[in-house]
Length: 229
Image (tube, rainbow, N blue to C red; front, side):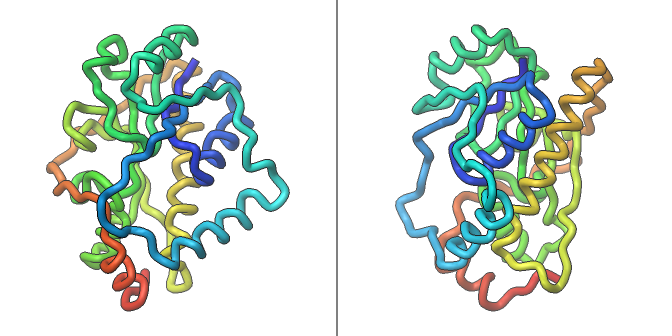
């Protein structure tokens, strides 16, 4: 079995359900307690994002359809280790949880992969696409699946792909585009595992700067003044 560690948000639910339609050898563990900063990050255009995603993904679908799932407060708890052992897990995929404490997962060294929305060689951490827009670094609007490492987002890269956009692309569509690429990467990864193909990893050339949550005031600026070109 393949474990997917994530949170119960619309784009993650869509990700899980889409992967499960193609591959039944997965189960997911949802982290309930989401880390949040002590400053404002929510902005109006994120409401547009929710409406856009619901229309695209859940118009005729059950948003709560979640196969083979468990819920925990903290992804680093002993409960998670017990669930993983119980399901005879071979690989772990991470999508949008807090940083995994790899000391708890020694058995899975070289078998834990993380989805990162952004170019990790330039933008590690959180809100990577927004920070790329802030710096007008449009080439870094990409998605990658990399090996988990003790230092956040520095592991060897398995897959990477640039987000396809045009002059009409809205900022609130980025998460949708990112998620669709993650689905494609997950299915490609699972196919390789099933066929026992060698996973070709590429070492990152540089260690990107770490970024935390983008404050609401900066998000508003990139939304009003910046267009994706």
